[in-house]
Length: 249
Image (cartoon, rainbow, N blue to C red; front, side, top):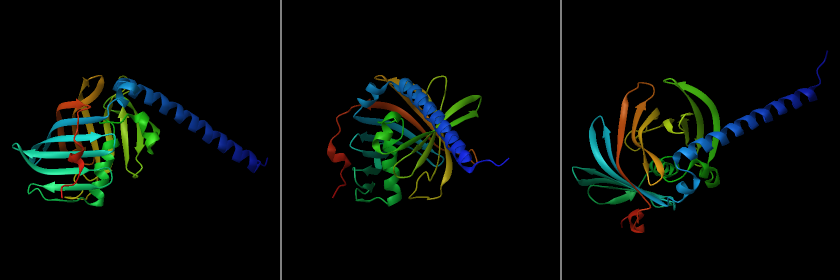
């Protein structure tokens, strides 16, 4: 019996639409789960600026840092060694710049600029996942994966820059407990990209918003710990001088 090509095309279209509806439904459900756990839409959207005090440990050094960001898509991070500023990176809303210990600022490379801007949008800082599509980014539901006994929901974030990050959301508590991406840890020092897995822990409530106070970045291929970041303090809606984002002359 000959099958009508039109019927085949209709079947394929219906199958695709059915899968898309299933994926969209799961995306909405997982977004709702995460958003509720993170503090709720209203509380998240009321965060207009943020300040993190951090300790960053890598195999060859340990430094302190202060990270600032606001909803004007601006950020700055100052790195300190034994209390002395040794490096600064910033994105002023249009361009990236950096400044060494000598106090002389210069434009950041295109790759570093993209990384600085990307970081502002990623979860755990200012924006909720539910806000990203309205800012030009994409979210998709990628199914589930068992890791260490947890059947995680996986959401894929594709930023408008093309950068992709996979979020592993615990179905029991709505927390992002793992992320995976493909990037260089310090792109201007070593541009080699690796599969990076970040494991987040020590979740705490700060003025109604849930944050992870510890993250451990590992090379997924070798399981080597590349960086451990510990948050010492988080300030929501601090008053930030616009001048800190501007490149010094």
